[in-house]
Length: 460
Ligand SMILES: [Zn+2]
Image 1 (cartoon, rainbow, N blue to C red):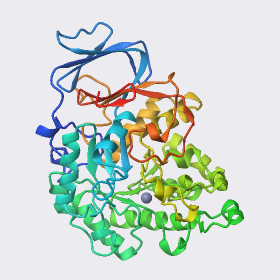
Image 2 (cartoon, helix red, strand yellow; image 1 turned 180 degrees about the horizontal axis):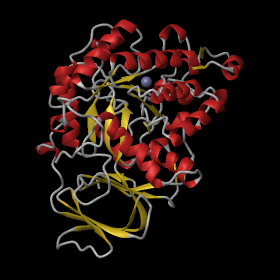
Image 3 (tube, helix red, strand yellow; image 1 turned 120 degrees about the horizontal axis):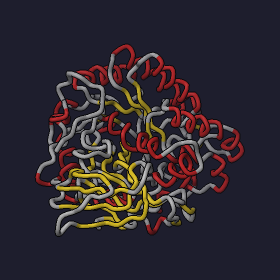
Image 4 (cartoon, rainbow, N blue to C red; image 1 turned 90 degrees about the vertical axis):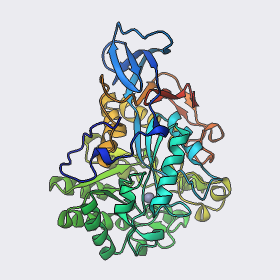
């Protein structure tokens, strides 16, 4: 049931048919599911959406389901394509005490996601086909979300020898994206080789932009707040110098390059510069870099430590504008579970990272749609369509239309809830939004016709 990609590629040898086949473990749900009282993209009147064998079979006011169909009745809720997150850490293998493929998949389903890409900084590192395949197959057996493993660019994330992109791309996991995320591929010669290799295999490289020589001992954004609090500063130039270098490499060597978690005003300017020159560069931004700043560090609460760090108002404002305008392509959570002993400690010793999967849609919907200038179609673009296009993922981020795979999210913009880390599906509790009220809920998530979350519960 692989669909056609909306990407602009032509002539690559890893075409759609080379994506992970929807095999026995990833079967579409047989039978019929009828969603009533939904408005696609929040537009027009309520309609019914009939899903048959995992595919949208009919959309309209008078659609009828056959006998035995499951019916989910909604009251004028918003229907979006299933969300896609190209940057999460599900911690399996290696740190199952903080998250597993099962708990991470549940968090994804509850957050409205139908596909996520889990980073390679596991233990062992996802640097060979066998590890990638085990992640893909295990998550398919869980069945709550399509979990695509990201392969590492260098063996063991050591920044030196390249992994076998081709073998991982051709494995059962059909790895599409490579990243040393958590670490920067800072050696320019290694990065150059990676870009040339990735171009040949037509896979995407995602760079964690951080020149490590500029961030030794850094735990907070380098600025007045860190200076006052006596925290080691992580300067904007550590990110921007790598963004600039990699944009120029993408220009000169032609590989597709993606910027992970853009965090500064200058990164926005550089991405814009690259796009104006048709350099194949894309970029993501996290919800926390859009709405939080280093003002939160005053409490020294380790939950606010993240990499790249929370920055200043002007950075967040530039990132919001760039996301609205399309300079920044998409939202990605960088969902990073950590155990309480890794977060409830001295700020300098807290591990960087925050949970994101269950709070991302509510934050983006509130900030940009309910209280902002954007509509639900825009949200579908930045949280589903563009991320799927960037990775050339078939079947997800598709239009809500007859014949398309039924990967869908039903959003309730009028049902508030309060974030409690202990109540999240994630095994870890390190949310920076503890006790915050979210205005928007995910009412249901549907993966190939199967209801994977309903009313805040996964695996309905
Ligand atoms: Zn990163």
